[in-house]
Amino acid sequence: MSTAIVGGASAGLGAAIAEKLAATGHDLLLWSRSEERLAPIAASLRDRHGVAVHTFAADAGDPGAAAAVAERAAEVLTTVDVCVLNAGGPPPATADQTDPDTWRAALQLLTVTPIDLATRVLPGMRQRGFGRIVAVLSSGVREPLPNLAYSNSGRAALAAWLKTLGRQVAADGVTVNGVVPGRIDTERVAQLDAAAAQRSGTDAESVRAASIATIPSGRYGRPEEFAAVVGFLASRESSYVTASMLSCDGGLMRSLT
Ligand SMILES: NC(=O)c1ccc[n+]([C@@H]2O[C@H](COP(=O)([O-])OP(=O)(O)OC[C@H]3O[C@@H](n4cnc5c(N)ncnc54)[C@H](OP(=O)(O)O)[C@@H]3O)[C@@H](O)[C@H]2O)c1
Image (cartoon, rainbow, N blue to C red; front, side, top):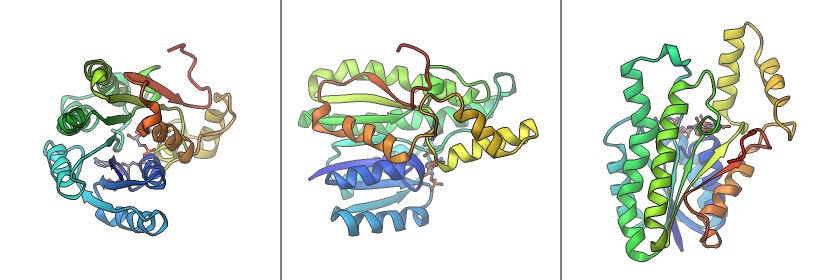
């Protein structure tokens, strides 16, 4: 049996990733800020997939979160084969609206906590000669989004670290990759559309329609489509894919890399 830690697992992309990894035989430690939101997801995964599913509440914005999650994983999973780095997003802001306190909070959430958690599970992975670190990024890493200054920057820093680490540990059987969502249909995207609608004095449906018009596939992605990419990167089959960023965006991004 393989084991995995999945962050932000009470909703959206994290919940879909948990589903995929449970279906492919992983015992899980799921975490987010709310045990209450995690509990029904864990129960359903246990019932349907016959895997062990543990839950843990921690806030990725808290400097102690990574240590607490890693400690809990050591207790309940013993060893960690797969670590999915994921949590919520920071508040929207244009580049001229940022302030130092929100920067510190955003960088803890998006950069420091995932790096800290990956660093803590890495030694065991290297010792055993197998590990998969997969981070949920954002299209802003490739093409910065005008109203997501914190997200663009914090995730770009994480992506640079992942690239550096992936090359460093590639010969140890540990792969390190990021997956770049375009617009996948989750609560977070609905909230961003609603916020954009409010700013521009229109309604969320119009914002969504305008957004869909920019996506070659003609629709938002489904969380399970995104989770399938993460599932591949978490698998043994993906052994020669490392230090990469894979897009799951229906063709949205125009850049070649
Ligand atoms: N969906 C997309 O198309 C898209 C595109 C670009 C980037 N992203 C990024 O991908 C990540 C996941 O997106 P999503 O669409 O799945 O978002 P979502 O539907 O809002 O789900 C976010 C998950 O993260 C948890 N979470 C939020 N804040 C947290 C915190 N401070 N500490 C720990 N857990 C936290 C939430 O659970 P609790 O409330 O229980 O903590 C929830 O399980 C986000 O960072 C988002 O910004 C998504």
